[in-house]
Image 1 (tube, rainbow, N blue to C red):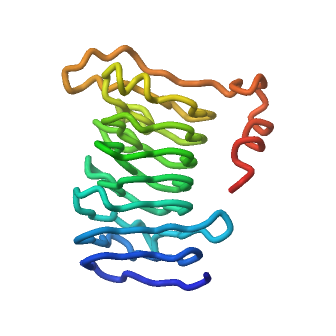
Image 2: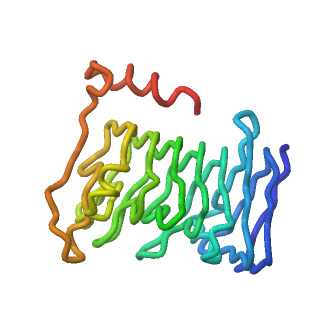
Length: 220
C-alpha cells in the first residue's frame, strides 16, 4: 500500500497484476496496452487507483479473452472521444468507483459482470454513445449518481441494447441526480427505441438530495 507507478508513454506489457493500495498514474493522452490479462484487485480499505497524471489518460487496451478483472478500484481522469471505451474486455468489474471521467467509460459485453459499482460525477460526451454501454446482461446493484450527459449526446449515461433479456437484467440499481438522461435504450442501430428515462431523487421516499446522497455514497 502507498506505492505509486507512472506510465509516462504509451506502454505495452504482456500481463499486469496490481496489488491493493497501489496507485497507477497514466500521463495525459497515454494508453496502457495489455497482451494477456490485467488484474487490479484492491480491498475496501486499500483500493487500487488508476488515475491521470497532469491530464486525461486515454484507456486500457485489453485482449478479448475475458481474463481481466477490476475489484475495489478507483477509475478517474479517463477520457475518450469515440466509441472505444476507457475500460473494455473485462471479465468482471465490481466494487469500483468511476468518477471524473469523460466519454464512454466501460462496455458490459459478453461474459462481463458489472456489479456493486458507483458511477458518479462523470460526463457522457459524444453523439452516439453514453457513459456506459450495456450490450449483454450483467448490470446490477450499481449506483449511478450526479453524472451529466452533454447536449450533443443522444444517449443516456447508461445506454443499453433494446433487447428484452438485457432490459430485464438491468435491476437493483440506483439512479440519482443525473443531469439529462440517466438511462436510455439503444435507438440508433435500428432497434425500436422507447424513450428516455430519468429517475428522480425520491427513490428512498425523500426528495432531499443531501439525505439520499449521504445514504448511498457515504462509503466513498
